[in-house]
Length: 205
Image 1 (cartoon, one colour):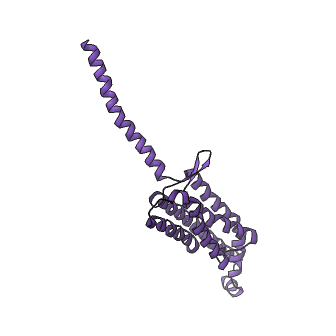
Image 2 (cartoon, rainbow, N blue to C red):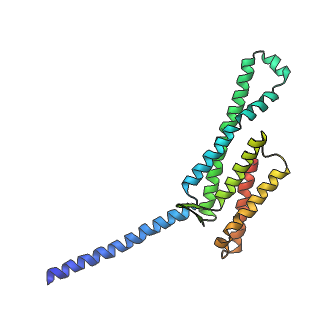
Image 3 (cartoon, rainbow, N blue to C red):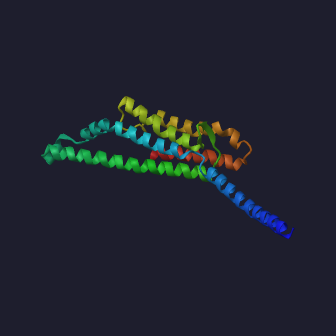
């Protein structure tokens, strides 16, 4: 009888110890999900798609860089190979800066999703997106596609581009209005301000 009581007491103690551990693990998992509204695979896909589009636009960039060297400068250089090398260095440096800039855009957007607005929408197949992923995606990919289609060196020129960026920043958060409907007005204003800031960052970066 005494042995049975001891065994039951041990089981009870283990259950009491297990419950807090289970709660702690569950809290950790929920916190991790809250910290990453957008699936990591989507961020990686966006980054590499944007860079691939930049690479596709290299012929246009090289052609534009060639026009920047005046006949007088070519005469001063004297060697066509050196002039070609200068063009390659200039374009290569621009590509490296773009790689770095896009990484910063992704870092900033992910930080905003973790700290400003952590809600997400399920896209299917285990993929989910926060509000700042589509903002960044629409600010990067369509302008690059347009520049590729029309062989434009800099897609950030003209009033149409800036109106488009403004529309993205203001309309994308509307898709999440069901998630922020009950938030305090200050947090909603912060959401839209961050969306505008991120979009503007991509436009001037």
